Amino acid sequence: FCSLDYERREYEKYISNMPWLCMPYQSNFSKQMAKKYKAKGIPHLVVIDATKGYSIITSDAVSEIRSDKQGLRNVISNFPWREKTFLEIWPDRIYTPMRNRTAGEPPSKMMNS
Image (cartoon, rainbow, N blue to C red; front, side, top):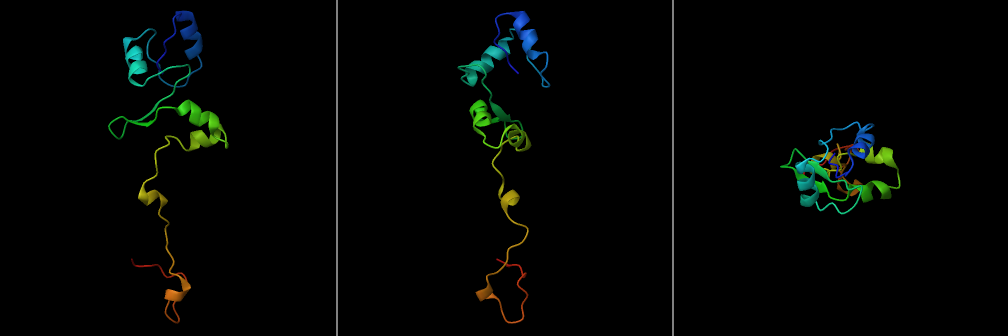
């Protein structure tokens, strides 16, 4: 969490219940991050993928969270919101259409191609 609070008391009050790491009060790094990720308002949430060269997953996570019709639990359970890989979306089995099966072949035969 990077804060741009002007008052230390406000900063300390705000972070007192946060479960995640926070930058120190008035850290220059917080100002650099705000500039780099174009923070224009409060709150501003950017989700970064540390496993892929710190690429941006979303630069407007606040809007995504607020607009999720299934609620915050859905947002949390789907975190970190990466696009799924081909292997994650490909089904375990692929069945051949009825017209392509040979006589006596069970309907659960998997395609080879």
